[in-house]
Every structure is written in C-alpha cells, then in structure tokens.
Length: 330
Image 1 (cartoon, rainbow, N blue to C red):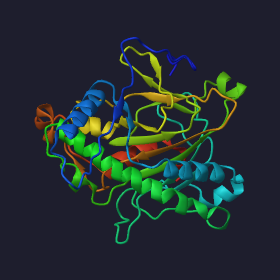
Image 2: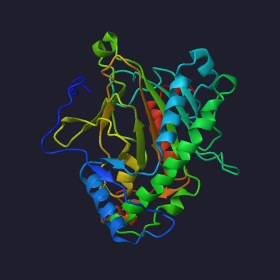
Image 3: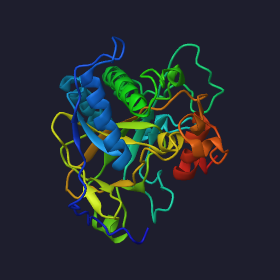
Image 4: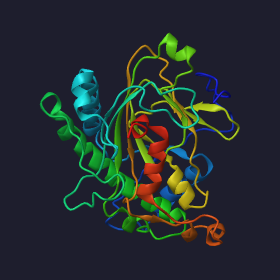
C-alpha cells in the first residue's frame, strides 16, 4: 500500500470521530422512549458517515476492563514456548506469533501477537465454520479464562443494545438482529503490539496494516498509548486516541454488505509510535455462524439479485484465510 505514509495521520478539519453518550437502557426492558430514539439517531449518523464512534456511559465496569487488560499483559509476558502450546488453529482459537498476520494488500506482516477466543456453549454445532472449543492455557496461565470471560460477556451484552439501536435506525424493530445471534461467533482478541523498531519503519511495517474489519460490529478497549488511525473519505488519516472510560466502536464489512452499503466499514490501521508495549482488546460482535446475511432486507438494489445472501461463518472464515498465514500451512 504505497500511498500510505508511515505514521503521517493528520486531522482533517471536516471530520472527527464522535463521542456518543449511551443513555441508561436495558435491551430486555423496552426501548421505546425518546432517549433511545436519540441514541439510535446518533449511532446512525456516525455509522453512516464515518463508520467509527466512541461510546461512553456503556455500563461495562472499569474493574472488568482493567482485569481483562491486566490478564492480557500477563499472558503476553509468558515465554513463546509456553504460548506455542496453544498455537492458533484453523478455527481461529489460540495464540498467533508475530508474523502470522499479513493483511490483504499489505507490504509485509503486522508487528503484533494475538490470542484468539470465541463463544463456547454446550451443544454447539462444531461442524459450522469457526464454531469450536477455545484453547485456554493451563498451568502457567490458568488466570486467563477466569479474567477474560466476565469482560467478554459484558461487552456482548452491550452489543445487544448497540445493535438494537442500529436496527431501529435502519427502519427495523429493535429486536431485528436477535434471531441472527442465537449462538454468536463473538470473536475476541487480545492484541499485543511491541514497541516500533527501526527495522519496522524501514520495512513500513505497521502494528496492523490498513484494513477494514470483517464482521458486523467491533467494540474495542485500547490502552492509553494511542496509535489507532482511521482513514477519512479524503484519504487523510485521523487519530483515534484513547478517550477516558470509552470504547471505540466501528462497523465491519459484513454489516456494510448486509445494509447495501448504507453503513460504512472504514479503513483503519495501528501504529505504535512509542517505546512501550501497546495492548488492545477488540470484541467482534458477529452473528451465529449459520446466520444468513441477506442484503435484500435492507436494500432495493440487493433485491435485484446484485448482492446475494451469504452465511456469516463462511464470510468471516474466507477473510481469515486471506489474512492469516496459519491457514496457508494447512
């Protein structure tokens, strides 16, 4: 991607990433009120024009966020030979070493490590794409599962309200997305970005090269170092610095496709410009693997047969196969 200048993001005067305050809502106790309507309008404006927004007053406690971040730091401090015991598999579960992500169109691999996990429940159909048991470390890192899952489930609960608001903004009922999430993929990642080196700069190596997310909705917890940059419609890179007690949320390719392009899935990247390790925890709030994503429910253009229906798990897995090297070794 030769047109991407390394670490050259500049704030464009016509674009900012909005901060949206979430009202006190419960998706299970009725959302038919003026506060919810205003929230839905604010989300739709951001999702349509920018594809990114900060979310405050989200109800996920700071204790849970800090517990998950602390667990991430402890895990990545483990020796590689310990982490290698749960090396990432074809179901996208486990630890991926630096060099394992080469995002489509990038000049080189990303400078990051990732621990992947996802939804797990009794009776799940493991024949479906990306439906599998998690690979949790034992002995050296038994803390990881216990410290991550409360945070993970709180974020998925939050996503129900965000999706309900987006549904209303798209002209559907608040529970429109619910049937598509009976056993959600709910892909979680712990991401470790080491300090940027001279060789990284020489090789034009990013923490995460320019890309759009694959799924429906991403809810990101980032540490206080910054480094996330979002590309606006003019091609300028906009910094998305940490905002206290907030999540960064963005629309992914699947939801953009689902809505006939009405919601924006926006290119972004990560550059760790500090001499410190950077950590983030994205939760990709995606539907059940067997959910059928049909743009015809939102788009008249799609009704003409231009955009066929797809299955959620197949869509995500096809993107994984193009962007992660462990699939090429199978």
